[in-house]
Image (cartoon, rainbow, N blue to C red):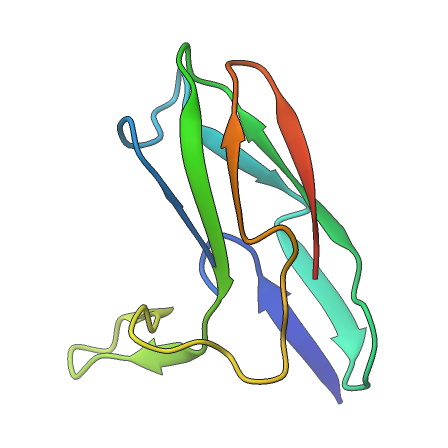
Length: 102
């Protein structure tokens, strides 16, 4: 069985300075990290600031929840136990990128 992390949802990104749009914002690659359930690193993801201004970024691994309406989303009230990200907070200049270890 494989454990799957979907970046952008299970890896919740928060930034100041506005929401992501087609012309800017944050991007994350790869969008999906997949590994058989085991202790150890999954791999890095790269966060890129595609906006025209500096962003303060916070990254956290979150468990999935399903709302009563059936929508699946990251549970922003809890952290995913056993999964660490580093760095968990950083500043990104316009056009800059940062590797985040998972």
